Length: 262
Image 1: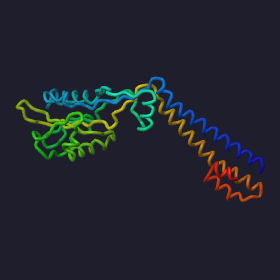
Image 2: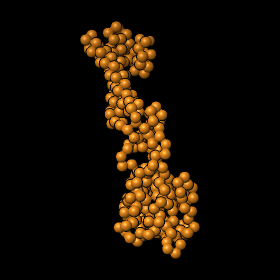
Image 3: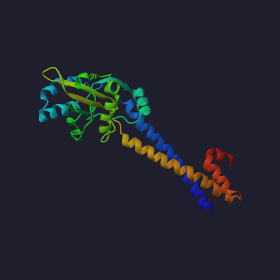
Image 4: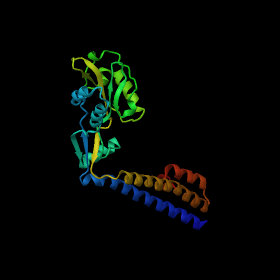
């Protein structure tokens, strides 16, 4: 009994040491990159007006239409603001996961609608053939621009379009709608662009998987310590002829305060 109590006590102590060590490793894995050059950039919103002329010219040419929309959806936005060092670290801790540098784009989806609201061409292509009814004539639609999305001018329609996209991706922010003008000066179709909801990109080396792993191990060791300490107290109390269950429950609930009382 006495040896078993010592084993449980040492396991509780080692669990606490292990939890503290992994907490330190977790803090280091998060903070170190930002003191060695990691930074977070905010991206410009997509500007659909830049591709409207080329889309209007290619309308009806499926292959050319797809090429233009694909290129637009894959373009990177220009960073407009940078957080580095402590500011970047604080921003990341407050806002959670940040997309890392790579194939990041500020366009979630882009589609060309006909007058009835049927998607003629789209990237990603799964949107093609879907229908989001347009309730007003195309000529009466107010064009969007960065900073003023369709959420303000056509909230119901833009919400329907966003819902269609969210069936496949959750990263949907603002929605833009811009008329495609034909040779006669009249609107012949509608270009809808969905912006990504997360506009921030991490530049620099940051091992998110390692940070997560260290955090998980810290939780496991701390949970082990939290359970082993009252077990040791209960064993010790029973060995001393005291009410082991009562002291064990007290330490389970209050931990070090309960240990101090014991």
